Amino acid sequence: MPAVQIQEGASHRLDDIYRYTRDRWGEEQAERYISGLFAAFDSVAAHGVVSKPIPVELGVDGYFFRYERHFVYWRRLSNGDIGIVTILHERMHQIDRFRDDFGLR
Image 1: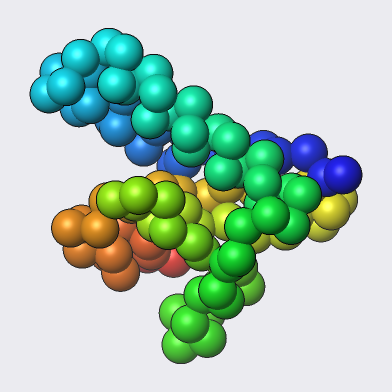
Image 2 (image 1 turned 90 degrees about the vertical axis):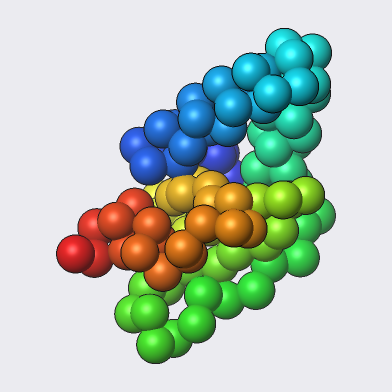
């Protein structure tokens, strides 16, 4: 089974998600949400999450799926591993943040 690698943009987003959730709903809920995200990442590697291709007009080869209130963007790395590129809240302006985290600006 391929390994999951959290890339820099996703790592920053995970920190933000944890802090926001902890500050709003408490540490226990923050831990539960982050643990759920990591379980979803592992499910990608095991083909247990249905992902859709990133729209071709964005010019990036990759996939995304929804986890609760977030969209998780990932791609297959050259060594076959899964690279979690970014995690964006459903209310974020997806295109601008997506381009930043994929290095498209």
